[in-house]
Amino acid sequence: MKKSKVTRLDMLKGWRGYLKSVRRKSKFKKRQAGLNKFFSDVNKLKNITGPGNRKRYRSPFSHPKSLPPKPEYPSVVRYLLSIPKVFSGNGYKKLDDGYFLVPETFSLIDNFSESFEFLKRLLVILQREKAAEVVLDYKNCKRIDVDASLCMDIMLADFIQYYKRCRSLGYSVGTLSIEPKNYEDEHIKRVLFSIGAYRNIVGISINFPDVEALPVLLGNREDPDRDSKCEVHSTKIVEYVKRCLNRLNRSLTAEAEDSLYKVLGETITNAEEHGTSKYRYAIGFFQDKIDSDDHFGIFNFSILNFGETIYQKFKSPECPNKKVVQQMEDLSESYTSAGFFRPATFEEDTLWTLYALQQGVTSLPRRRGSGCIQYIENFFKLKGNLDRDNISQMVLVSGNTRIIFNGSYPILTTIENGRKFKRITFNDSEKISDEPDKKYVTFAPHYFPGVLISARILIKYANTNSE
Image (cartoon, rainbow, N blue to C red; front, side):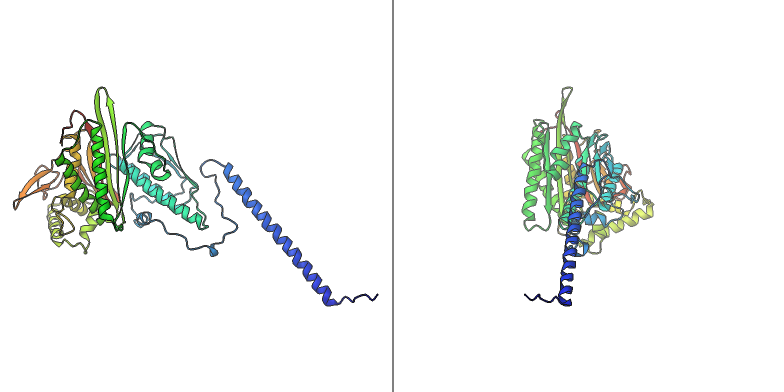
């Protein structure tokens, strides 16, 4: 039998096939080794604990060039990051381990300086993603007010949403966890699980027998049903106030209830119309106590939006109410002549914000502009009278302006052209043209990007009446 002749071409084809098979096996082994190493690294990360010990990792199957565009920050965080001195002028440029000790009094009413610094540092660290673990330690915290709690929760919720979106698209995220610790204090636990982070972010809530909670009411000015939702939220807030008073065996008269409903409607509408950010927030927390036969409760309530400050709204060339703007400019000239303006103590934006509180002053020419001062009066009356005590106060914060109402200066009623107007001047002369008391109307170094009206009111059974 004749043997087939093996040509040189056949030998080359066989050699090429052999080389291809070797390369295929080599690539397979490398892929398998890479996959095994990836899962090994993931398992190791599960067993590592302690701040800063976790390593960032990227899936070996993703490549930056093959990923979709990185998502933008949510609108609120994007707006906050656009203001360099938001909350504080401190830039926190040094490396940070992500450990946050919550202030003993976390409040934008009573401890605004330390609380604003806390919020600014939290914003910076979450944006930089340099700390693998962010720890919120409540071991020294004794009190949380709803205003500070809400601002923190808004930022946390938006950043967590952003991190999840990045991971779903294949991007690595430097911040791997945000965890609270040492929140065993009864008051702290009540806030966190009734209106705070556990309820708003994690979705875990607890009903406490001595707490009346109003979880966050979120308004969206772009919602086509915005007007109807404003009415719903106003009704919910009025019903919430009635439930709080019922715990002290008190109730609102029909006239007081109607007045509160109307002023809430105008305040909520203003908060949505004037905000650059599309969202408006309202939140409440009430806890009643019986101490040495004294039955009382502490009422916390805040409405806020992010966006233009009151001063920016009136100072803008696009402000439609030119008449009011001219009145403000004339008042500024008189203050300048009298030497009342002082840098970082009392500036023009402080004066214009105070003037904007007066009834009849509004940036919209077709509005009566009665919401803010009547809002202050209606809520402060919940304590039973307008007298001063050591706890009750309402604070309006907008930009660098802080205005504090605690009953030291009364709300005045004047009659102009047969119509009653309410005003407050924070001075003994009762004239807006005279310098206000700098203890209650002041320029603050910590900048709030929008408008916040926050109340902390002591309601005593002995002081409250049917009105």
